[in-house]
Length: 455
Image (cartoon, rainbow, N blue to C red):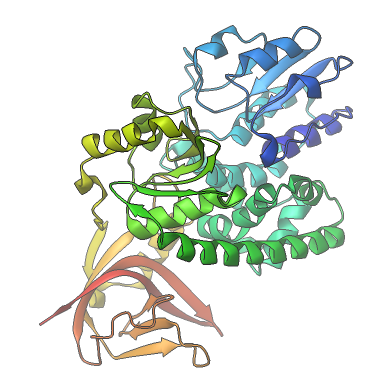
């Protein structure tokens, strides 16, 4: 979506009036030859089609094609009758193989505008930055970190600004977590509901007040989506076939929410998951990995799957029913369950009394560009003297706060957590950090991953 908005806005800025071929999620990924009129002089395909030789070469008989993409390529990409711009194609020397599809478009427009000099490309950085997070690109790549840093400081798109305000976020104090957990899911919901044109309508909107009404509507849709996924995940986990992978096969599936449910199951059960539906002898759905396990490569190496298309950790999956038992045996024979044992790795170990605001501010600034390959700094806090343990909020107690001298230690959605901890206990605790600012006061926070009582 962001790739299309950038390209269309730029073409309009240089005096063009391009047609847009919209593809809803239900229509699949990539271009179809019948969608492209022979009257078109040029077709620009963004964020797809690097390996779609058959459809692309049919279109190329009457229309010139430029493909701007970042997905992994195969041998078909070498015989595309098109200009292919993709850092992951064979013999490409561009160092950053983890640039998002929108990033490829942005870099392409930089070259274009070197000639036209029509726009301030800083105005395109905001959607570029969001795309790095929504595509789960590696954030330990310096180029990606730089562009995300610039994006957080340059919010210009009226639709995005409206969405930020509707979500009650501070435009001048954004970080990766705010985008990844508040903004991106709202955008993704439109795609999952096969209403992508509503997202385009928002991000093409030039009137802020109209954009705000659209943003409010999308926010409501996303709340409904979150509740549905929560309910379905609880329901599905009852029927999970709990082997070395977590398998769910249903008659109807969960439509466009398969991937979200698979993600929740992987997180809850600490192993890769497949959420599939039985479509007349073919199991179709979504696969999600756990940790850093290269799931896409693993399932492809089985030689048993019909489709494993997308990214290494999250992709669409298909397998014939007749190959299913062999695939399950392949998993059992080739996976060591110790790969998925929960392990908490921490970056810093320090006594609570030695922790100060200079260190907290430095860590918080680093965490603004949290993402794949660069998670939030995890701290092991030693010698924490507990002053009190509280369950909050009063009207609907569902979260736990352990109060210490400098820190509030927080655990959400589990009112029983830490029920063996009481005043005057000493604990060590591991988690990520944050700052609570309210009424001009600042208080250090830790979001607990685990703790241990000590003598």
